[in-house]
Image 1 (cartoon, one colour):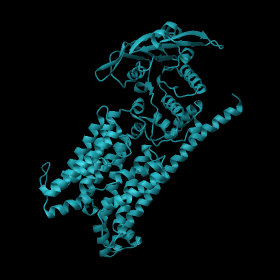
Image 2: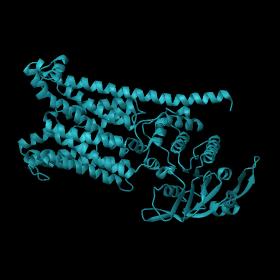
Image 3: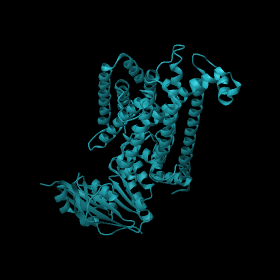
Length: 251
Length: 358
């Protein structure tokens, strides 16, 4: 089973080091890791570094994968596209990269399955340019999933989704991680979703790692006051999930 | 999940791949249709001129030359054939060059004509005609096309490297192209002002773009460039399509965006500059050809690439027919006609199908 560990990882744009000192314990197959932090903390930069799109110090230790370069699949935050392609074509495109022109039935079957699961079959043959922000995000999730990676890096995949779709997509991702033995790193602003779905939480602030551990170890009143500048407490909802109750902006 | 729901899911799933296969078949039919239209246009191009022949005579002349008179044979094979073939080859090359420029620069206005590459070639050619000074040492007969080629290549590479600089937006690249057009037009005017009357008329004729300059060696060279370029683009079909989803997205699919861009632009610089250096400025084919292909086939390069080849070839072949049909006995320089035919055609296509135009 695949495992991932970040060791003193940093990322730089040009000569400027914008993220540094990110280390995690060994992340195991089936785990979902929420990467949280205020705006511009360095979450996207960290993802790009893990995906190999940016250079920097430190090490991404990937073990027990047979997929080589395609082991990691990264879903960028910006999902806008004006290409004259249908949703179906754009998902096929993600799956067929680096392979021959011919499209096998097995490819199409897998795409159908993923689109079904994400409930986007109705827009399969709509042009990309005609999609809403939320639909674009769902298509982007599908593009990432059809590559069948071992590690998924998802940069705010639910930011444009309604509440129902957020829960639906995150539950699906959690189930996929468990079933297929993937490790899913997911950047989230909604701390309640992080508390509900994540096995580990990685907190970044100003390009530095502040904490990494179990959700309740990281997300607590002290952290919320220091990092987010709010007074808040953690309480359980009727279904026993932990929730952040925000009392107000910290004095 | 209830049994009925499961059945429904399965049916929806089948619908997706069934529909995809149906759409693929439709695209292949469109490509076949374009090929047939191109063959027809090619035959008409051979048949029309000061002396008009029937299509039956042209077909006979092509497949059984001994069955037609020596006059028909000479007109079809020696006079009209190079022009008709050059129209197809140049149309295809310029259209593919425009298509890939639009793809990698993410810009619907990119084409050899709009980015100043044709203007650069015109300046290079004028410099050759007026001063007879070659930019690199070549035989006297090749000074004009080689000068045109070098200037066009320089302009293309300039556009490419500037577009790679940090912070350069898509709009900047187009504005830069417009600046290049103005610059080279000004330089051209400067050279024209200094030119003798005889050289001036040659420069003016060259800049109008004309297929009558076609010769078999020029055709073979242009065709060779096209035949080298197409398999290289075809090999990168999935990657080039992915680049249209944005740099980050393409990179996330494992595409080496920088490498593909550089390789594509180098090939495009050859594709754009070789035909221009042989036949002069032929505008709008490189802009309109790919847009037609995009509107009817979408941007999956597996269809968009052959579609651009065929639409560009067809466009210039039809224009070649038009150029000799306006006033009987007169063949207009094709560059004038591509602008006259291309622009309204382009506008009508945009207005009739705005959503799929870009």
